[in-house]
Length: 285
Image 1 (cartoon, rainbow, N blue to C red):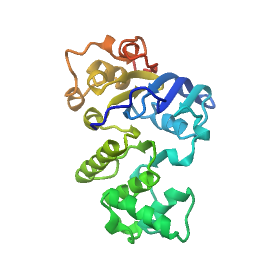
Image 2 (image 1 turned 30 degrees about the vertical axis):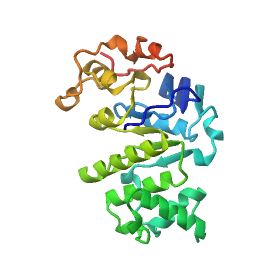
Image 3 (image 1 turned 90 degrees about the horizontal axis):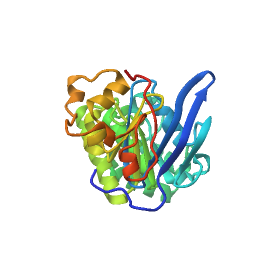
Image 4 (image 1 turned 45 degrees about the vertical axis):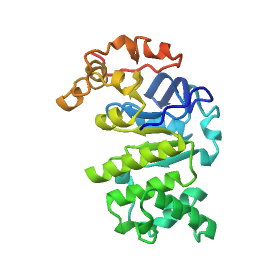
């Protein structure tokens, strides 16, 4: 994504020593990071590493057990609804719900099932569908949409309020390669036009490398945070995942030194731009 993060101003997200526990299970521990406004953050890590928990904390759905979190300087639970747009995983959605695509997008305006949309709501929902190239799907039932079409409709729902922060949970999951390419193209276009910050959980290292301005690697605590070219090294990924396969290793840059990347046992890049960073690594060797 080509738009540069905003310089100065209020960061999109600040976490200070964030910890989350569910009973005896510690999902996240001592995560400290600052995500600049306008950044596109890819969140990587093995299953159970706290990626979805991190998103839920930012969305105000899960309260921290320790530390502090702010979204544009505001506690997540107090953030106005229009500031954040959320796009869930397509594979988790119920397509049998009796609704039209336009109604689903209208749901993003009301934060509740809209019933009969007003003319203004229909106009705004239609504009959001057009923004993602899905205006022709407006009157189609959800059950008749392909995975890629449904992803576009949910993306329109997430963008309908023109949010300052877009949160995506595995946006490429459940759609084919063509749909994935279209989805990232649409996200790129929205980012360029709006300058909004974006947070996306992904297992796609290629997407993280090419579309993100920052990468956060979690494994219950921070493994690394920084630019993709510095974070996506085999050493960082081995600490997070315990291995690096051939496809992942293609992003390793031999000239990048680990001390230039914020990680759980160093400073480096975080110190250079004076942004606090997170600490992680449940799978360290």
